[in-house]
Image: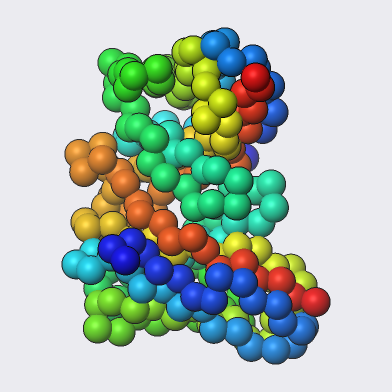
Length: 119
Length: 110
């Protein structure tokens, strides 16, 4: 399809295991974002990529979290030694431009998310 | 203080009613404002941008009050399909990320 694709859609893992979440953005979109949404909470910004570079990783909750993007396209978010508080929906979004603004409609195109449950 | 705060609701309204709710933001330098809609267990989608003079999109009206640092969304003639969580979203200049509120839940009943 033409939209943002994320996998897996659901992941149940045991505490202490590593997980890898994948995002395939809309073709041609240079900006890619990872957000996290816990139940009843707003979207928490994790990391932003412009091309393959991540200018700001300050949103990553701890050093157990890492992300990379290759070829200006697919991105993976890796969580090592998962903890129960990591349980959330991890949303990936892409946009055509560098900065969302009213000028470019401010639209981020989200994938359906990866629902992570850590037991 | 959170960057964006919203009344979580829920707002339960009958079909045909008007419902309105606000969102406040903390950064006075904020320049871009949006409402996103999120259906249950679905991804957020852009509903509309919010312009300084206020703007309408069909049954939806958005307004911005810079002095008091809040934006509002009004839904006229509510439809069952308007049931969703509405996310207030704010962006400051030179910042690439959008700041999202936790959302206001609206339920329209028959």
